[in-house]
Image (cartoon, rainbow, N blue to C red):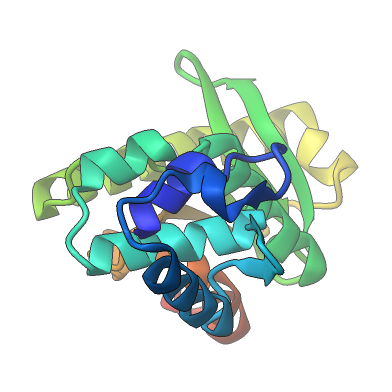
Length: 213
């Protein structure tokens, strides 16, 4: 049911009525399950109207995967702009200044999904739309983000834009791969692999001096 809801409760669409869900479940069963999901914070249920915020859609996605939905199907149901928007909202609420889709000139032209500038350290974030979550893919993404972040740091210092945006020279710029999935959590080659729903916890316990969360 979570995957069905992801497909129907599209960003910006607003609430929809329960009959519009077109669910295969009998009405009484459907209403009962929706009520349970609302109690878990996965959606909002008011009368016969159902809605979900960006944060709730991410929770629905995780719930769908945990209950056997195919990763590929969940990925296609998500609008990944809201993935980045949700990450930006968390970071701003924790005191970071954010720049989305920052393009820069390193060894070649490149882009980071999200640059988050904080008072103690900054983050260069790659938001991944995982279709398959194997160790090899995670390591490859982490290494690419490490190199990209090194070039970004050099560019920010060389152009002076880092200081203009509030980054002191020599400040730590930490590469992060932000995911929807729970797999691969930790630090891989100096790159933090963080599920988006644990981003707040990660930021609260991150230790930039040791480069370990």
